[in-house]
Amino acid sequence: MPVFEGQGRDALRRRYLDAWRKRAANEPLSALEAQIAGVIADHPEYLALIEVGEAALAAHYTPEGGRENPFLHMGLHLAIRDQVATDRPAGIARAFQTLAVRLGEAHAAEHAMIEPLAETLWQAQRTGLAPDERAYLERIERLARG
Image (cartoon, rainbow, N blue to C red):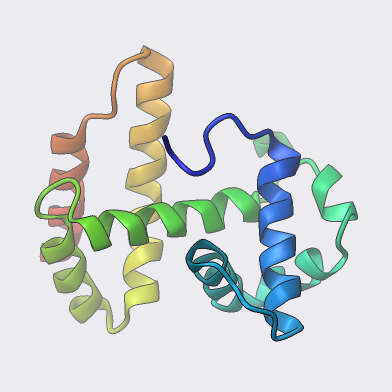
């Protein structure tokens, strides 16, 4: 079962707050907490939000409001890192490495991959079908080729 399955928005957001609090306090982190804290560290623009604590749980992010959802953004980073680590879909790790070399760093490659991943997930949700891994991988491979 996926780690976050069945958790509500507040519980998911609380994982980010807790991971960052534990990192700041030099407390032991689980592997997942270390990954979450690493993504937060890669996004200093979100630190003020994370550090307000409970108020971050209630914030609303809508396209109409013009505010990017930092929790969604960081969650997509985590998803990409998991895809690369497990090479699923097959070939994504190679495409990621090529893209990272072309863009000069892994974080930039992840940012380039966020839109195709989000669109793939949105399409799957809209159609009620599984994500089209082949089409997603093809988009990432095109990005990697430049």
